Length: 248
Ligand SMILES: [Zn+2]
Ligand SMILES: [Zn+2]
Image 1 (cartoon, rainbow, N blue to C red):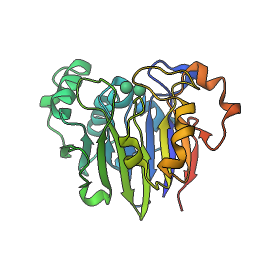
Image 2 (cartoon, helix red, strand yellow):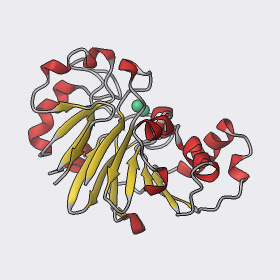
Image 3 (tube, helix red, strand yellow):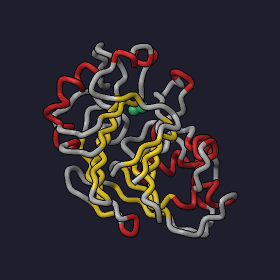
Image 4 (tube, rainbow, N blue to C red):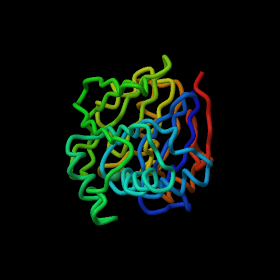
């Protein structure tokens, strides 16, 4: 299972990084974790075939995590000529927010006829959901990050491996369950040690890591403060746009 960080920036372009978008490639199919506003730029820059993406999993409905969906869906319709179904899983309230987003970006786009079905799944909390032909089992955990609908940490199981992702959040105990024994934990680390409400910091993650039991920790969504101190990191790695790794 191959993971590519197509974008690992914050909402404000810190470090010139693209918005959050991670690709998990299982060979015959792949899925995205978050689809930030710059997702289609990421997909083109790193030579990803969008038609091979069977599902998009969303942690929460902020622009830097789901703002790329209108362009993804319109590209599928007009440019990439997609025919395979697209599954989008995210927080409760996804359907209404996605319609509003589509209409704001491309008026009339929600009424357009498409050659591929879009199936939306609004994730319950702490209850696993199997995402059909994509072979992924995902569980959403409620975290602390106001975004108009619930914000989630995601725990994804596929190919016998576990990938966990905190999304954006301050520390909540649910992260212990979401990340337990994960082969890969991708965690927001907005700051190095400064506490910012509704966001995580490296110092907290490092303290909690033994309790989380994740085998590998990669930090993402970093502020200029955090980006300036990545050389000080211990027991974890910093993400970069284009970073690739294999989970074996
Ligand atoms: Zn964010
Ligand atoms: Zn956010």
